[in-house]
Length: 243
Image (cartoon, rainbow, N blue to C red; front, side, top):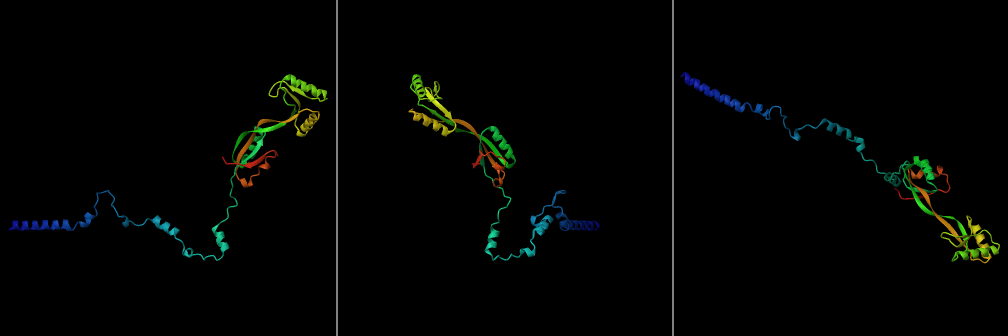
């Protein structure tokens, strides 16, 4: 009888323990859904808003007074002024120009040094140009040296002085009657020889010489006064493409 009672008590105890383990430990098991040491996962909707986001939203929120719309202007002048603001008085303008011609590279170097603080960039370039060296009064070239000497003797017979026969070079067998810097003096000599009955000619003498230019971009083209630093009246300027 005692053994049967103990057996019934053990069965009842096992049933109670089983019910407690099954029903009484739900909260405990739910608290340890992950392994120990692993952070618990949360949905984004479950997270509280960050404090910095709330503070930023509060700082950029417009005041109630500023939210009210400003009254519309009834003046068309005021509307146009608001739509197109005037350019700044300190706005800089950029344009490129060329200065020259300079006779020598040294002249160009001095000018570049004088303008240096007012330039964004600059470059030197050389060009070839044809210049007049003077005027030459002469007779047409003869077919040979003997004919040229005969013309020279005829000039002497007419009391015409200051001539010589070119015996070599491109103008061989030509009787030269003078080189002149002033064209007026050359024309006077030509007319004198022509009045004596000779087929005199007057030719311009030229040569190809280098000239130097300074291309530059000023820091501020509107207020750039290069004449205040370069006083050579032979120097001019013109606009050019930027580089």
